[in-house]
Image (cartoon, rainbow, N blue to C red; front, side):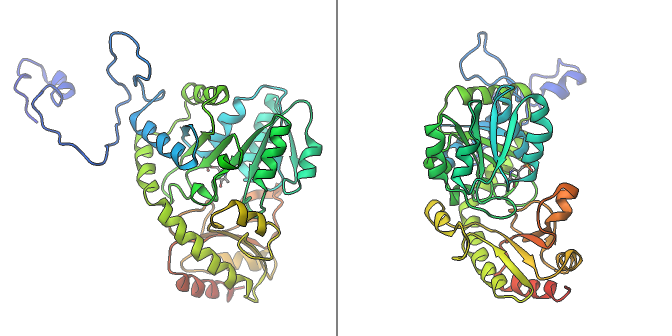
Length: 383
Ligand SMILES: *Cc1c(COP(=O)(O)O)cnc(C)c1O
């Protein structure tokens, strides 16, 4: 744009200032708040409460995203991060060396790696328990225990943890309960309402929903000292999402309830299809009445989500052929996109993996289920 007042400025100065010197410029009143890429914001003469001055500390798009995420989970506050793992890391960094923490046997393998390979050398004490058995959790509690970390449904076996019972046990023993709510999303499960203190998300999955965005978040039931510490770590350690990523995440969240409805419905149908299929030995899906966590899942979840694991009737090689044999379902790690994806789990976990060699983890997408069933037939025929 041209500017009436810039003729006395040199070209070096005009490329920097000429777009903002014209006070009469009309910018309209956008319905969708734009992504604010500026890393710096003009400061008033004196510091003010809540001022935005630098994007690592605060950014309008991040504040919008955090407000929506806190509201979705029914929490008082949210801190958004650059990835799910950055969110997990901020929580454990809020603990002290010597603190003891319980994690479940079946959980996202990146979290296990974080705890055992990064946080244990740093001084955290970690024990692994079967969190589907409350007596085991109770037995593992020590005087130094401060936190219990739960994931339900778990990855990749879709085990169900009774969150009300676990939060009661935590309350009696003065322990913090953290729940990874990535798989169910707040559309299907609200851990803070069931007594959890913190919820963590990898928003790279269903929240982003289109396999093109990384993000993470911590949502707190109360804006207390623990949350203020996590906020301090977010702002100081700086694993923050870009304004553009926050903007895109908000765009994705607007369709989350509708996407989840379809993921939920399609997964119930595909689980029934797999259950009846001769190429499948076992199906792990909490929506199936025979699943050991089915009753608990019915109580604490609005629906069972879009993730299914199953065992192929065959060995490791046959399973690998099935995963490569589909036309629509892409063989990828990660999950929660509009497109169906699946993964031969042992391949991703490497030599220390604990998952059966013939396990496939399927993320049921939004394609028409009839097309998915035909594609599954095709893949099973390669077995
Ligand atoms: C993917 C995932 C994470 C890690 O999130 P990133 O965004 O990949 O860092 C943590 N927990 C669960 C359950 C996940 O599925």
